[in-house]
Structure formats: structure tokens, C-alpha cells
Length: 575
Image (cartoon, rainbow, N blue to C red; front, side):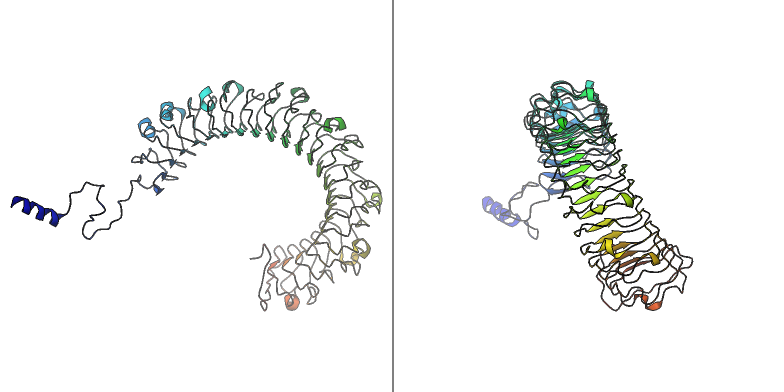
């Protein structure tokens, strides 16, 4: 009888349960059969069972109640000063620990806690207050980011004995050579990226991983690369040594000779007086800007036959700085950049395949008939801010440049547009010269020209001859600002979309001013002599795409009513 009563009671009440261990086969009456939500620290988010995200919560204390199942923990952008050993050490399954941008000091980061994190792969502790690196990091580590701290010392097992380690970021710290042990990367033969920029190194550290592909050492105090320091880094592809104190005596012919895969070498902002010797054949980009180089010797470039970009801006290259044939070994050179030197003429015998020649801010005063004849594939020529005068620019100077698309002659002393310009030009810049007349002949045939800048000259409307714009059928941008125009020039190109007329002497805009430019979208008339009644009401009626008219800075405020008859499809920059 008692047994029957007990069975009846069990059937009425259901089976016994334990919190969190309910049998899904016996759900409570009226309740969902879904499992209880997993534990997550207050205010944090846990999008997956293995992920805890406490980013940007202004936390001062390490959050409690983090599940032991967590593999990815983000605590970045908080106010944490320390990590409690007992909390961190129990998270033995962590693979990612992100502590970026906190207030953690070395004392607040217990070394012993990492002994339990045997599966940690990604460790981010940049932008904190570490004075020394952790003495021990797990062997499983793949990425370590300790950038932007105050680290003065690392230890043999910080990054050593890590066979899976691929990337180490130590830039923006206080590391000197004394703080880097010689065996810092012993046993870590897979490191491909090492960033030590913005530290206090005085010479290139020895015993770097031979597996390196990218090495950042810019913004240090490096004056010397010890002999053999890079002899084992045969996989190196990118080497950044700019903003140091390197001199010619700090390098030798073997410094780069073993780097058989090197593609990018930045030695800018140093104190070199010559192009380094022993450059590898694989080099594609060589940046030597802002040194003290006075002359380029062909022998120094002979090994770097694959070079495509040579940057020599802001050196001390004078009249003999680039002797004829100095660049002849560089048959595949694409870009030569010699901005801000003392060159008095275009270098002779340039590589035939050169596509971009950048020579602004030199002392070039003349262009002969054959000065550019050796570079028929040139697409960009920049001779801005030199000493060119019209009388010394030969009418056949540009004759062979049939591939030229961009020509910059701004900031010279030209009084007229050069003749014989390549018909394939897309951009022509002639601002800040002394142009006093525009004639149809120099612009004839430029039916592909899209942008023409004539700003900051001495042009008056009467100096622009009839038919000047006639063949500029593709012109979209015309800059005539800062001249002496008294009204809008007539018969402007039909395809024009952007017209700059600011800072002239325009006092009147008639009803027919823009009849020839139905595609105009942006018009700049600021800082002229316009008054409230200076612009005819009909002036903009035939401009359905016009969306910008700037008339600020005139003697009186000019009210403009834009046309609204046609739907607008404004170009970039239009509201």
C-alpha cells in the first residue's frame, strides 16, 4: 500500500531535479524546454560559449564569473591596473587574451599566471604601462603585441622557445640594445614579422630570427649595422631603417648582399653620403630620401637590376649628381623621384622604360630637344618649381612623349604655354607661372585633356584669343583662379564640370556666360567684385546639373537660385 502511494506521488510531482541539470525529457509544466543561459560577467557579452567580450566598459577590476570554457577573452579599452593570478590561471583554455589599452603595469601582470595558459596563441597588451616584458610567455604563442608601453627589457623566455610564434610587436617602447638578450628569439624559428621601431636601439640587434620577412627598425638611434647582422635573414622581404643615424661607415658591401629576397628597403632620413653598395638583385623599392647623397654612381646600382622605384628626394644632388648613364643598369625602373635637390638639367640617358619622372624643386632652367628623347614611355613628368623660362623650352622637347598623361610645369617662369605638347595628355598644370596670353595653337590637338590649371598667372580676358578652348573637347576641370579676369571667358569647353574663377576681378556675370557649358556642376566665384545685382538671373538657367556655387568673399552677399527643372546627379563633393 505504501509503495502504491509513493508511486502515485512521484507521478504527480515529476522526477527529482538538480539546478542546472534538468532532464529535458521531463520539462516543468508551463516552462520552456530551452537550456538555461550560460554564465557571463555583468555588462559583458558572450556571443559564443568560448567567447567573453568586456571591451570598453571602464572596468577597474578583473571581472569575476568568467567561464572556464573561455577561449577568447577581450578586456581592451578599460582601466585595469592588474590581473589577479587566481582568476587568470584558472582560464587554462584561453587562446586569445586581449588587454589592449589599459593601465596594467609589470607588477600587475604576474608571470606565474602564464604557466597555466598552455594554449594561449594571441596575446595583446599594447598601450599599457609595462616597464619590462613578462619573463615567461607560453610556448603555444603565435602573436605577441607589447607595443606602446615603457618596456626597457625582455627576457630569453619572453619570446624564445616559441616554435609557433609568427609576429612580435615591440614598437613605441624604451628598448635599448642592452635590454635585448642575444638569445631573445632562440628556438623561435617561425617569426616572420618583428617590429622594433620607435625605440632606443643604437645598432641593429644580432641573432634575429632567420625566418624574418618584415623587420621594422625605423625611428631608433641606429648608426651601425654590424657585419653579418643580416647574413642569416635570407627570407627578409621588407626592411625599414628610416629615421635613424646611419652613415656610410655604418654599412659595408656585405650588409644587404645576403638578402636574396629583399624587395623593399627604406633608408630615408639618415646621414648617408652615397648609395649603399651590395644591393640585391631582387630589390624593387629603394627609398633614400632625405640623406646627404651628392652623387649616384652606376657601380652602386649595378646589382639592383630589378629596381622599379628609386626615391632620392631631398638630398644634395647637384649639377653632376646624376651623371649620364648613372641609372643605365636599372632597365626596369618605373619611377625616379628626385624632388628637392640641386639638379640643373634633366638627367641624361635615363632608363627607356621609365614611366614617372618627378623633378620638382630643383634648378632646371632649360629643356632641350633631346633631353627627354630617351624616355618614350613616360606617363608622368613633374618639373614644377624649377627655373624654366619659355625661351629655353625647345618646341620639340615633348615630341617623343606620346604616352605622357600628366605634365606638371607649375611654379616656373613661363610666359606662354609650351608648344608641341603630347596629344594624349589628361592633366596639365601651369599654375604659378607668368602667363600673359593664351593662344589656340599650343592647346590644339589636346582633345583628351581633362584637367587644366592656369591659376596664379597674369591672364586677362583680352589675353585669351578666340578659339583657345575649341579643341579641349574632354576638359572637365578648368582653374583660372587668381588671375586678372574681369568677366567669365566666353566659349568655354562644353564638357566642363568644374570651373574655378575665384580671386579675379569679375564684377558682372551676364545671361550668356555659361551657355557653352551645360554640364557644369561646380562654380567658384568667391573673392571677386560681385554685388547683389551683378549676376543676371538667367545666367544659370541652362545648367541643370549645377549643385555648387561659391560666391563668398565678395563686396556684397550674392544670392544664387540654382536651377531645379532637371533632376540632379551631382559629382563627388556636391551635396
